[in-house]
Amino acid sequence: MHNKGIPDEYPITLVLNGFEVAVFQLTKLDLEDWAYGYLYSEGFIQTTEDIGSVLIRDDIGRIDVVLTNKFNIDQWFGKKKHYTAGCGRGVTFFSMTDVKNFTPVHSTTNYALSYLLKKQSEFAQNSPLYLKTGGMHGACIVDEYGLITVREDIGRHNAVDKIIGYALRNHLNPNGLILLTTGRVSYEMLSKAAKFGFAVIGSRTAATRQALQLAHFLNIEVVGYLRGKKAVVYTSTDRVQDDLKEKFA
Image (tube, rainbow, N blue to C red; front, side):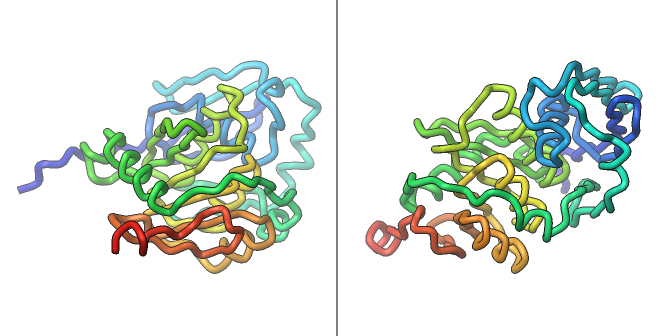
């Protein structure tokens, strides 16, 4: 017998200075966070001050954003769109070549692998839509004090945009923050993490080969399969110390 709720998704059009960017499949929660996060991740804005207003019209499936910066819309929309993999339709204007030109991440903060596993468990326990439906993705930031903030969406990339938007709107410094996600770490997910400045990204599932190539270029630590008492540290920036053998021996 099916006792879980059914996850919702809605087509929502993002309109930027009167120009339609694309139609996205989104969960109708934290849409302002999503708008800020998506526009930042894609390079439309550099700070929150570049946005004059955000009007959420979830009744008609529309988000209108007015920019205050001197953004060249015609030039940007002339770039090729890359549609992202996974549930919840997404689009990015950055190719893998573009992302390789991002500034490498610099951070000297270190973490124990057991700490990441503990925070991934807290993340799972504080994901109400997933617990209700079993069919949602989530993204979580862990701050320097160990406090977590979670955002959820039908699409894994949407959830990451929401948590980045939250961080931007609250003026959080990426130094000392960890990004955790339920979804596969693909190149566009890695690019979002790199653009904001996360030095460590962890997932309960895998990372793609292309994402790991970019992680090496951009000096980002990637940890996958964060489940129970297991994990895989894919990269070698020395930011995550494998203490599992000692802790669970």
